[in-house]
Length: 265
Image (cartoon, rainbow, N blue to C red; front, side):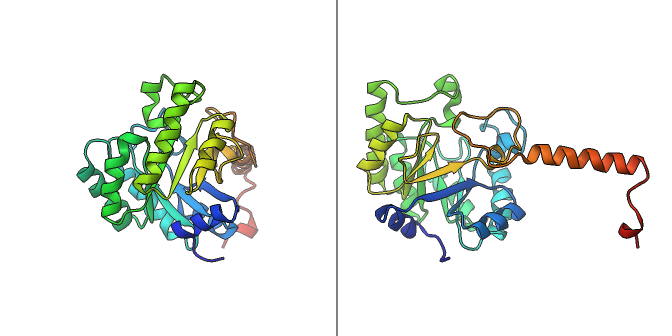
């Protein structure tokens, strides 16, 4: 398998080959995902919730994100490594956004960054690209705007909002993003947006007609018990397996069965 780049993702769209994306936060998981041939490893700001235990993505900092980007980078050889830019690291002004995004490439080893927002982010995206920083867009349900949206709600059901999202997608493409995450959209709208673009779309709860799919890894592995979005398919229940193993360990230690001769020097 060749190294995945932003150019090879475009080729995948043009040749109708689906793109696979998973979130990743640590070195051993990155190695396994890379071995499995996952196209994009996204160090998502979901780190805040599924790893650090916050209620939303808002509290996570650049330094916390960088810590995990560096770990994932050490385990990644072929996949494209994308880093989420956390809340308030890019919204204030373009020059600050460029400086913060540059840290993810220079210090963290990421190959691109992802930011949330539509037409209001065009100026920032162009500034990043002028500094040779590849950018992935993200529209629809944007978790960093959870309080503005009034919760994690499906977007684009109303005609006016749907038209705005279609225009936002086109403006992000014109600004130069290499792909756009479509989150929490009706599949019909996501298909319409996908068909209108020459760059790939990545579905996060936006149906099967996008050019690729992304899931939060602890969700699809059954490791995040707090809640599970409707669009998440659990491919394993590792939480139950871990609980069983921890209980067995506790029982064997308390009963003097571990360590035995086999596990002693």
